[in-house]
Image 1 (cartoon, rainbow, N blue to C red):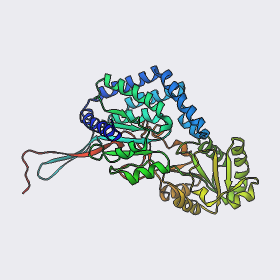
Image 2: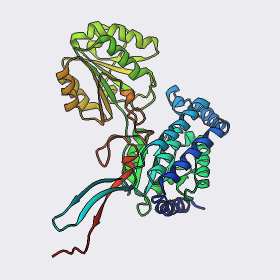
Image 3: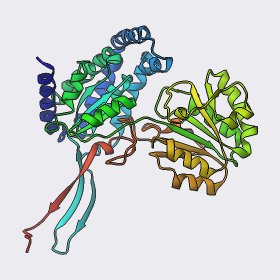
Image 4: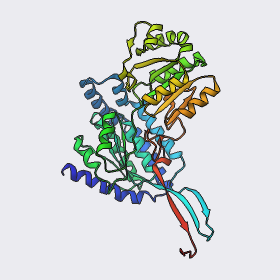
Length: 418
């Protein structure tokens, strides 16, 4: 079967499955999810073996440590994924929720109810855990899913998707509700992006090149899960011990993910006291520092920060550092260079905290907390499809409710329009 025909076949199958899946009971869906979690754990050896092949290929291609970390799966990580699926099973089912009802003067009852989006295409890179999270979130919210992961994780994705799909079908989920495109040729993506007759939403997760390609070629509405160029601003009235803890976590805990900090902004009034010990701690953790002129005057032996650094999502142990005159300067820097993902301020000044919350335009804005907490699970949403950096139709960590849309329902007893 040619690529075009295969992709079209999957899309048609997904559309047919979505009509059945959208009306399944919560009990059937939850039982399927629990079976999927159990079977993932039973298939740990199979998944780990497949993942080893992906890791070996990545090492041959001389990928970065951060890249390989995103790709890596072991028994512990797979059990964590399975645990996350069980948490999704516990969450309220959004499908069928009546969010509002009101009565018109003619006696007609009008309301809004949550319904599935339909068929969702997810195009992503590196992280094989996305395969499980996305599939189960779509299942719980009544949506069919077509998964197209990157070639770097093809073996892992194939193993995980196969286990999940088989488990789901065995529990009464319609065949075609969970599908994976195993073709690594880019043509598979371009063909998928043309199928607006069958696919309702495309969600791309990955680097700038992937996001740009999807936006330019898709005839299907796109919910972007774009880059995370995240900042932390240490205010002049910050608790410096707290700031050091937050800033270290935001950069070092897992540098290869979208909610890791890429630029540290420090108020000039505390820079002399804060930066020497903070940068020393970073260096011990293997972080390369690229500082502005004022930063380099305080701490020696660091690289110059160039204009391109302020625009770069490193996804690695590299950090840009800038000393700013005020909170207004910090907010202006974020407005110019931020990606709308996650931004944080560390301060004990209530007015500055509120100003930052009000004026910074991002999907998540933190006061005295690490940007690494920008996550659906951390927010109590269960797993997430990703973090949307746009404003339609959802923004921030995308959980179950964001995979539904509102439909008007109307109850009458013979009303007509005069």
